Amino acid sequence: MAGEASYQKMGRIMTDVSEDMLLDGRVIFSQPVDGYRAAIDPVFLAAAVPAQDGQIVLDIGSGAGAASLCLAARVPGVRIFGIEMQPELVALARKNIAANGLSGRVESMIGTLQTPPPRLAPGSFHHVMTNPPYHPAESGRASPNASKAAANQEGEVDLAAWMRWAVNMLLPKGSLTVVYRADRLDDLLSALHGRVGDITVFPLWPKAGRPAKRVVIRARKGIASPLTLTPGMVLHETDGRYSPQAEAILRDGAFLA
Image (cartoon, rainbow, N blue to C red; front, top):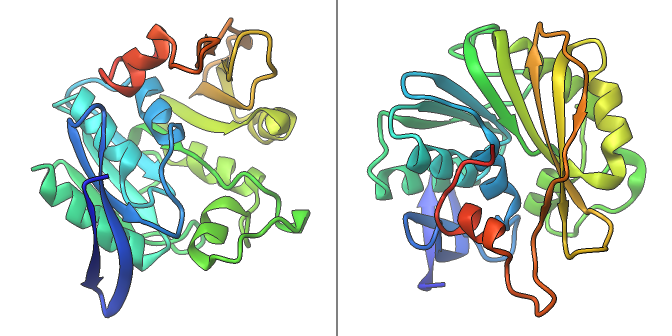
């Protein structure tokens, strides 16, 4: 963390904003101290998107822009649109975009899945990436911090509706990439059933021999190939350090093939 500051835009004030770095300093990233904070999930999400130069990507629930910025750093010719319902986070995302010299390549827009920006036309994106809220609306696990609760707990849009909207935004044969809780994998696959194919499940194991807490899912619209369960990746060595494979993602910005 390089420091903390207050940031004002769009008529709102967000205090206690930390100035951080992602990808070993390649990405400058401001984010709230007390609200939702980016951990490794958005970095792995960006790493798993098979985007190429000249393609267009939609980042749903983009927050302060962590995944969008990491993907833009890895694929210089890609263009990314982020949609986020919290104005304070959109303001921070726009600050982060400018700080990283990505204006014109990355955009952050205010909107919800019920009322998206008109510019986001269905069937127009090569790739969609998203880190949906992890907790069902009825779970009773809402954070007392309103911003964090909005990021982590489903509201009016449940997981099935979230996935339906995401797939609808894809071009035919476009890819959908999702980072999600491993213990809700059945809910995620159920939400995707009949909508996509060529599903790849990539578990993230905290340490060797321990249950996965996160999975990365990649699928394609209009493809009928069967599901593939991969060996996944062990994140930490026995001494707690990141594994070489995880380091390649988190520090070097490698592609999660």
